Image (cartoon, rainbow, N blue to C red; front, side, top):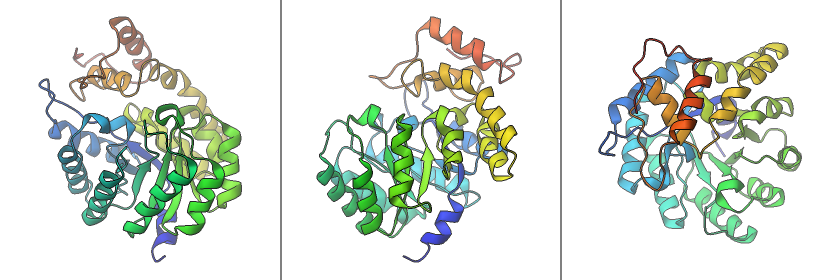
Length: 308
């Protein structure tokens, strides 16, 4: 399909999954949202994603999801690739959001394996094939079995990559490193493999990955981008050093369900008001203090006013 080869070259590196900021009354904070995008671009993120897991899509209405995509597209202005999350538990909603992403001019759509429903592998195939067939833009499958309760099996993904030319990659938030090796073996080395597990960002590059979509980029976008930059520049030791340098931060950011620790940290940094919509909530005060003690090792909090 025309343009897929170009997309495979362009959609590499750190594609930062931006949080969705809310005001204290839980309405969308689009000013902070735009500021976050500008900050990421200035700090070297190679691409921007919104309304993925880190963006709390299940807490957003369809109207809000489209508003965030529109705002992100306008703010980015083609400076870096834009890959919005367009998946849902609902098939027709997924079709609608993915079509909207194409209409807006997104560079690709990130489509999650439907969560809660626990579809079979043949049902997953039919769902993703219908989505891919409905648009011409590239599709990146998002496999996160820890939150969807179903794993996209290698043979299912390989069949989709064979039958749908615009399914060009996968974000694997799968801790099974054997699985992700088998993805590239089955789908081909040119298939774009992104890490969605923070401690696998470097290892996935080592086996031929295209980059990462890491929540930690919300706190240190430059360092997360530099894991890829150093690898691409063949500075393996620098990339490996960053991998280990970020380990403590990665760990603390997942001591509660993502993005609660992220929002607490971004509040401490003065980037957003740390607000989540129920049923999500802020971490306990004890965990927030632990987050603060770790984040300040990476970010200067001394001249910032902590929120919350």
